[in-house]
Length: 163
Image (tube, rainbow, N blue to C red; front, side, top):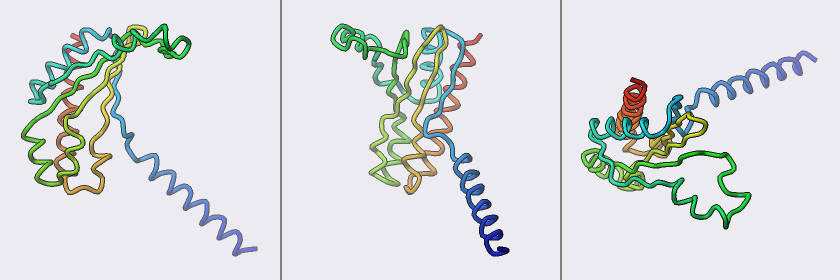
């Protein structure tokens, strides 16, 4: 009986430790929302990225493009009722070179991108964390720096939009 009790306590401790490790793992998506319409947030984040030397090379307006299929998709069109969906594709060539030098396979992350969507006047910015893909890569330390710089630029942009 005592052995079963100890085994049960150990099993509980292991499961609690596993849960603690899993909950400490950051989300693969960085996400920040602000109660502002997209237009101002988009412009402010764009400017903050460029000031951080991440140059926007493409600006897909995903919501506008998807709207062309509203009739074709019927009930499957925009079920979350998002008012706007946009993306920014951007790159810092110095970081791209450093990543390529450390691990050419991680160039699959280049260029980087963020997505934005608006619902009910609230804009959300989402960014796929490159460090998640680079967890076992020799380029991880470089991509940690890249991720930190991009997240900082997003924060600066959102704070600027609030003013």
